Length: 418
Ligand SMILES: [Fe+2]
Image (tube, rainbow, N blue to C red):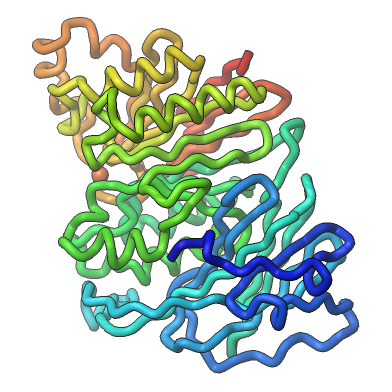
């Protein structure tokens, strides 16, 4: 779906005194600005199958997205700092052939069929405002978030990656306890190797996080477990994050500007590629605006595990970008566990402990040393545990803490952004 095709509500119908604007298929008809004493729109008979979740498209602009079985317009009520707007979703129905799961599993199977994705876009959210939303389905679903903090605000980010049922439920609870303002997923949301690990189960255990913070994702290799999966699931559900329609994007959140890159296409390894040129320009603009740059992607460039890379092309591309623009934090997943390398002052944090089975993180140490003597000495921490990583940005200092599912904080560091 091209979000730029959305109708923008007429000013007379939808601009509240806060400047809040909502966009949906039915535009002005849905864009009334009632008072809190007016009754809520009648709920519609629709079964939510995935979501809802918020995606930041630009500072002050978010998209609320969810999937239903039925192709019917769904009313959405949003509040921000006491002002209300009643919206109606724009919907797109697609035939999905992807099937995964096991009827006897404790999770919900992914079944083929026709599924409808619903969007509303909310613009004009004031800096620092709280956004509350409620979708008016038979069983209403609601949530809230702080989607547009000021650069001077303290923000908490949670990084989770490589989520596989059932441990992913515990990791999601751990991330929820961090009370993140923004959730970042490093890819590999679901694994076809586990018949109980479905896209429906992913959206199930992520719901507490998705109802309390915007959610952004990188694409991982397991989003390509089947030929149709990347397009029918990942692209259909996660297209149009940030300011691009590509499989990479950037998001500004208060004091930070985060690049969520695509390490799976090969494009990122090519210094002359469209993605690298885009990342270069994004980082330059972010730094010139005083924002703290963070780079994230799925497949790490440093590891002593079986996922070490003999080809350093991607590393050289990313490291050059980081050096050029003063990036001090690079986040990755893919390795099922936690590793941290420090290279030229850049913190390379890999946390793919989201639930997929862990393994020996030193399995390829000898091969790495044989190929690149001294490289293993760059690793400052490794732990074969499930868990996730918290990033707190407060007054120009970035605090990073890794917590495992036993509740132990086993790694932590901080750096000044300037
Ligand atoms: Fe992976």
